[in-house]
Length: 424
Image 1 (spheres, helix red, strand yellow):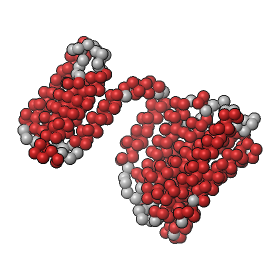
Image 2: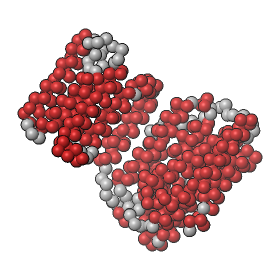
Image 3: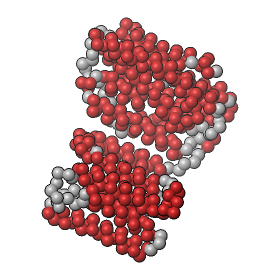
Image 4: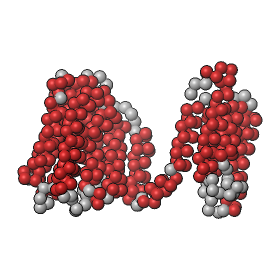
């Protein structure tokens, strides 16, 4: 934050921000505690403003007079602790939220007055948001079961502990394997799986198979398509809702590859987005068409596709191993045969799992491929994967039940293929 426009008063800009942040936090706390009797609250609107002011004063003095700064900060913190102790004596079950908020308010004030204005503003804003979401967060925690708590803990372990500890440099033949990038595959797959699991768990089977198909396809649209096709074969008649589920999974796949490309191979995203957009639009239109037919054609009543334990790390580790093998092959082929050979490798390997092709692209050294060519190289795995799912639908569900969904998938693949001559 730039206070240079304040001229001779620029040194006091952070001091004023400290007061403003304290009042912002006090506004939220005062509103929450507005119904409590006067004198029974630990702190209110004015007190939090003063705590922010005290932190700002301590920060302002820290570079000018460290002794007085220490006295101001220590005395203010002691008052907060004493206030909590007094309140807890009268009410043993009192929450420590108010006192902790007071200490953080002081810290934000200190940061605001010591050239960390952006960090102070961000910390205060996040704290106000967390405090305002009290009811929603308590409700969410109350609905968690043991499996979900363990899933959160495991995801925190693999994403926040293991990932930062891994070396971020290449190893192996051709400098192929970067441990941190490889483990990022596990983090991404687990994260997508967890998001799909939570969505399916909250919506439930009675909300239909569309939501769980879309959620499951955040991990593997191929697996979802095979599962829905199996249910189509077991049904007495072909239900349009099954076709809607398969095309919804296809739509999520198209969107997912764009997200993964943005994260892992952003240089290829502009061209890939142009080529993928027609297929995504065709899948969405087909989903809508099947949904309109399902209003008169019945809905599934046998529940939604099962979403497995979100932190069964087996599939994620298998994918990481596959990526290691494919990356080594891609480096070898690129070294021996150039870009054409690499395109063939990615197309074949992406037929069953398009994510592996994108991840392999992301592991290539910068500048290996031109951005426009990189986007084109990633299109064949997506098209072949879509055609593979069309074939799987026909082979599992049969022509009579699966033809409409299979033809819609083929149309989506054709739409993206037809976009190539427009841009090349």
